[in-house]
Amino acid sequence: MKRLLSRWLPVYAFLYIVFLYLPVLFLPIFSVNLSHVPKFPLTGFTWKWYEELPRTPALIDATWNSLMVGITAAILSTILGICAARAITRYRFPGRTAASGLIMAPLVLPEIILAVSLLVVMLSLGLELSLFTVVLGHVLICIPYSVTVLNAGFEGFDRSLEEASTDLGETAFGTFRRVTLPMVAPAIISSLLVSFTISLDEFIMAFFLAGSDATLPVYIWGQLRFAAKLPSVLALGTLLLIGSFLLLTIAEVLRRRAERRVHGVARA
Image (tube, rainbow, N blue to C red; front, side, top):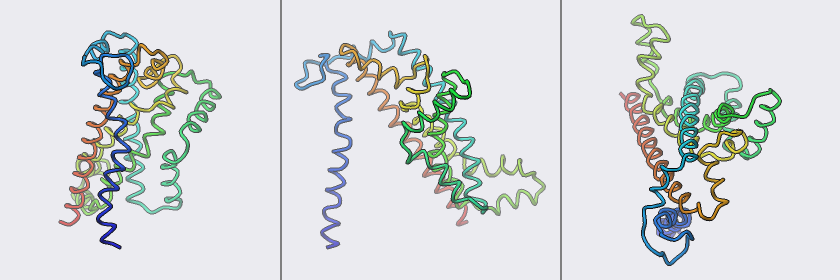
């Protein structure tokens, strides 16, 4: 039975990957199609849909909005994630498990429920919907991913290194800055990249909280209502797909490097 499972498991994994990613592969194919209609057979090859992107003012504005929101959300999420991951991995305190579960709750709660709840709270507080409210929503979504990545950097960290720094007369903040942060720097960079990618691709929070300032996903959704804009949307989606894949790949490489580095120091 085990031999049969080991034989069919790679086949199952291959079919699963094909089912999951095959529709995504059609995106770059249709983005270079000459026709406005994404269907086979292709009518010709062209780069004009990509060439039109820089000449669209609304797209440029939405891109800048997404970049500002993504960078701000990534920085705030990573700072809060560092505090949470350090507390969870280093200290034992009442409610530690409950606190960890609450931090991860946005991963399992329906995002539309979170978005509507935040919208009600912010309107009740008298906040005007803007990119600031989008940042707050994206921070809520990104923190669980940041904590997950940073936990790998903090777990297994040899506390004797911090104790040695303290014994040599360094302050607690100096030890954290000179010893702890350099050791978990790859995990921090990975957290920044993952959080930025999540924020850049996030739609529901931005749709409810953006007000009149559209982010890139909201702009793409608006363009889908016009058939003539579909090829440009496919081209833009392809660029986002490639960028997200590269950022997540870099983040994963850095996360694994941080994990090996921490474990290597712990064994030493």
